[in-house]
Length: 284
Image (cartoon, rainbow, N blue to C red; front, top):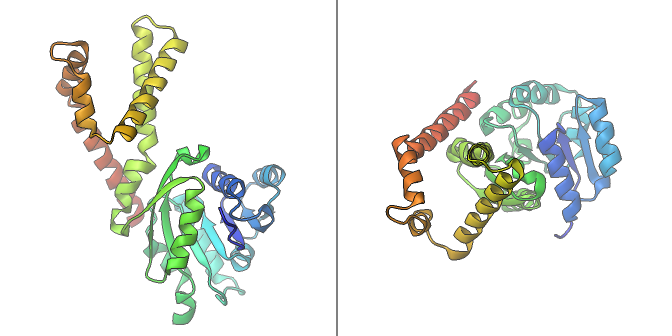
């Protein structure tokens, strides 16, 4: 990817923050020397500095002031405190255009605006666009899926910058913010559902007499193959499921158990619960 020639700062440098830093550097989007990270853990910052040759700091306000793009990568319950502290600092002002990208799960753009915008005049606010992002953990291996939405101050160039950063970790789709809680529930939490299903299949294989190693290989290869078949053939999941299901056969016997236990409805209900929880977090 072409270099952006911008400075980028990470407020919070946990697992997902590090994944983004690694992806950005590997993709050549922004040089390591133009990346700064802040975190409450000095050990964490030391590790990142040694691993990626980036700059580190414990000064969130200084980082915010100095960087063209600021990634808010902290736990949701810390967002208000951190941003309010930045906005209250004596040096807080927006002179040049600055993009804020938040990956704090469930935190609506309005909450970020309420922290950052009150000290600013209308012109300064228009120079501080905010983009809300929901990435997921496969971003750690450059196979992530992110959803993003923006406020009214985001221009096409801002969206393009956010998209380039996120595509370094996988794929990205732009949504209206009203859909972001569902995005959180489907793709943000989604890997956990898949891991749980894989865990269950491996356990079933072992209980059926297979070794753990063989059961694990069978399950992982089967799932990867099923996804590839779905992608390459372009058929619906329902159609491919029916192709595998011979009347009176083993697959039908298994699916009847899943249907009896309301497997599909359980998945639908689980994602609805995750959506509701994301909405609850945002309303706190």
